[in-house]
Image (cartoon, rainbow, N blue to C red; front, side, top):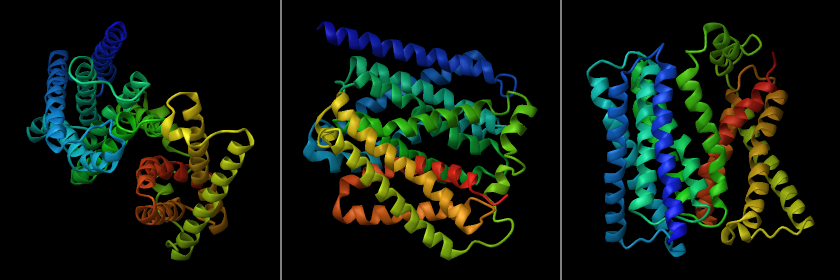
Amino acid sequence: MTSVSTRSVVEMLLAVASVALALWVRRRVAPRASVPSHRAFTLVFLALAMALVLGVFEGRVLAFLELDPRDREAQGALLAFALLVQGPVIEGAKALLVWPVYRAGLVTSGVFGSLLGALVGFGFFAGECLRFAFLDEPGPPPFELRLFLSLPLEVAAPAAYCHTLGVRGRDRYFGLAWVLCAVIHALTHHFLFVRGGAYWALAIPPSALSAWLSYWLLFRQTEGTRRTNAFLELEGLSLREVFRPARRPLKLIWIAFGAFVTLGVTLVLLAFAVYVGHRFDIDFTLAEEGSGYSGLLPVVLLGSAMLAAFPLSAYLVARASGASSVLEPAWSTAMAIALVLGLFSVSEPTAVVVALGVAPVGFALACLGAWFGLDR
């Protein structure tokens, strides 16, 4: 009883901290996107209530389908449920709370749209915390850490697709951004709250990237023009120029060659990680079974090797091709990820989940590595 009470207190504190953080963010962004405090609190409260309602709905649907998140034999069905039902329903509910404001023509800037989305995300996270504190059983250990890692993902997703609603001419990208966020939400939720062992560690890179994305969307225009320009002007190349084939058209040969380079570098680094693991007597089977340090270590080792392969291979491709933009290395990375997904979908379906989970972070790291190798 004591452990349950302690867990509930921790989750309640996380819920209160989420609401307080939402109001703090509203105050920080106020110079560029002002939302009255009572309206911000109302939006957060509505999101909190909707999260509780959807939590009850999710439990009823899982019971109707006879799916138990703790059943290892039902991992495939639970992943399908997350992709087809859970992710779209939750992100759809978040968008539904912001949509009336957009239809009224009140979303006047991208920062304002991101602020509304972030407030909804903070409210949903608070509702999730209260749901696990009073309604549902906790997931695999360490559950509180898993719950904390979901906060940036809950906030960044609505902040990203609501940002498109406030930028003139870009609201047509809302649907695409929403679909991507729904898929990422489903995958990370599966890692954090369904998969046992140390697979929760695979959600750390997307969580860190989501935290940075939230900060960039909310505060990039509130810290002064000089600092913003210093970030956007990367040694004479703006972000638009980095992603634009300025000097010559894209060459398919370098995209195809880069895909095989990415696969080769990934295999070499994974083989090196396995060698290091066996050298220091690391049991890789504990990644599925263990939840402590012994289970976390093999996941961190293999995940670090996989993520390091993306910027390294993109840098090599950019240097070899003499590229002036990151598009060729970026497309080669996307092609390599698509090839891996195609192979794993036939041989090892579980690995598809891992590949999809690291794909957004890997793509971002590939763009970063390619930028260092650009011919400037």
